[in-house]
Image 1 (cartoon, one colour):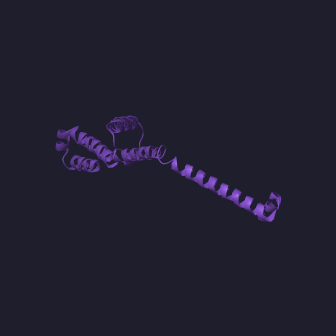
Image 2 (cartoon, rainbow, N blue to C red):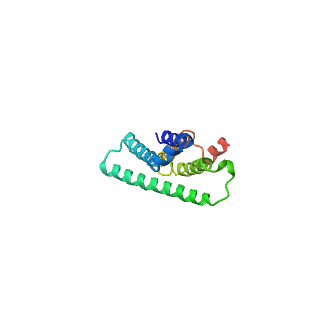
Image 3 (cartoon, helix red, strand yellow):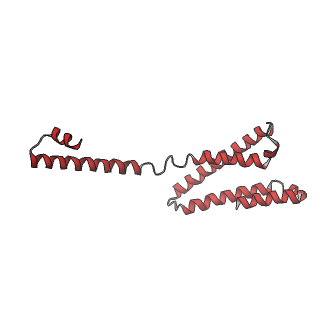
Length: 156
């Protein structure tokens, strides 16, 4: 929805500058409201169960959005006084900045989720294999009455 609002904003700016100027700040506000609605719907789809967790998610999302918008505003202000090539000025450099920031934020996605399960399963599987190997070696030693060194030599 927010992308659609931005697309409408670009079209209105191109074909009706008077309407674009009269709407002023309202089109970006609509886009931000769409983003907030998207955050709320995302929280609902994750089925957050308690009010405390939902409150924490909402406050944390708000802080995250604030930091992202603040960073984009700061970067755009810096770029305004920089020597950007003509074809990239305006919307082009904004898309590049937004894409790079998106990649940066995506890199944080797996830091706290899903990391605990895989190593535990691997350790458990490894521990089970070691235990099975010990039992097998002990059984073979009991049956054949050979030394542990003889078993190692056979495996090599």
